Length: 162
Image (cartoon, rainbow, N blue to C red; front, side):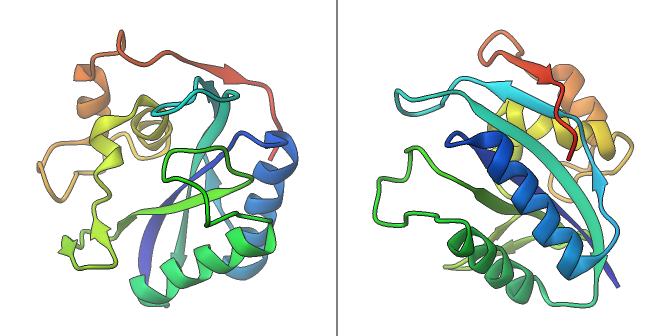
């Protein structure tokens, strides 16, 4: 049984699609641990603000199967894969961690690099995995968040039941 962490983001009807993503993950994987939901400005392009959170769950599926299921859930929720990498999206589901696996394949990198680059990924991850040790830096995620330069990316909690 592996514990996985998934980031969830949306800036197109974010309340609707964040809830849809959480519901789909709960239906497929069972009980989820959910971080608070945060709002932040779009990174890498001009666009509406994003809502983001991180969820954790246990699974017997391989990391490749989990990643494929995330893509299916995105597709069901209208994800447009023809647009630029940094663009508006209905639902973005990214596999951040799969236990303590460190992987660099052509299709998947774990831990996901965005953990170390974006407040909207690291903050909610630290909220639910504060003491969890990052398999790459060998430091707790709470410590990584405490040292993160919070001035470069603003985010704020939003009241959204998921």
